[in-house]
Amino acid sequence: MPALIFDCDGVLADTEQYGHLPAFNQTFTDFDVPVQWSVEDYAEKVKIGGGKERMRSILTPQLASSLGLDDDAAVDAAILSWHKRKTSVYTELVESGVMPARPGIARIVQEAHDAGWTLAVASTSAEPAVRAVLTHAVGADLAAHFSVFAGDVVPAKKPAPDIYLLALSELEVSVDDAIVVEDSSNGLRAAVGAGLRTVVTVSGFTREEDFTGASLVVSSLGEPDGEQAETLADPRGAGPSGVVTLATLQTLLSAPGPASEAANTEMETP
Image (cartoon, rainbow, N blue to C red; front, side, top):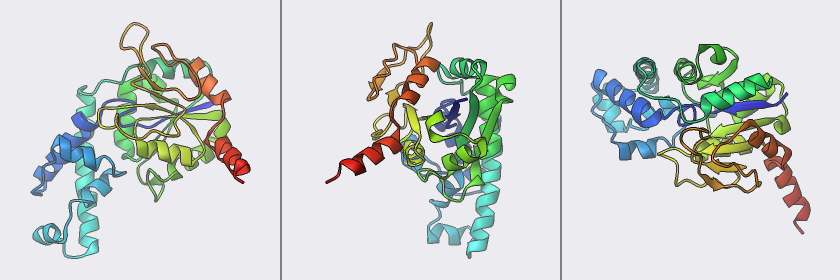
């Protein structure tokens, strides 16, 4: 059976601005780190895959020295402590309900589950945070049917394809039987790098990014009686009309994927 693999942040819910950003800033305050990211600052930080990596990006030699982090071991220990606290704050925000699921997520997950599809999440975020968002977005019953690949399960994070290659291996699914839902250029590059067809549902931080290689780009998955999906790019002619459905995904699975295109390009090169 086919597999439907979701990214987490910005895909299952609008988590970045209303979850991760305040959680990072609260953590910096809790550890007396003199940094507070604005929305504009964070728009740049989201281009870095992984929370620990985003935190590490603030540590100039001067700041590390002022915090008493005088060697790599001290820096690594501090990052782990900060990230553990940040994950706790973030999970509390998720459970408080401040980040509703994005349009169409619960609907298409239910459709896929009813059709017997394999369900998974592949994310660079910490696993407890991912599971909290997933459960909040689709409910505990449906969340129990997901495989979750998250955090540090692979050494190279998105845009490296490692997390998706691991998911394919663990799920025992071929690239031609799996489709990904992402929201960012980094995520798209990771999925396409693994040979996967990808639907992009743009989010507030990613709408202007380059989504070359996506099978479909939409504003959201859409709801029949709610927010309609705006089609931003449809190179495969899937033709969603306000709503991305399981039938839409099946159409994309029957179309050429990134690996097929790459092979054809190589054959055509004189």
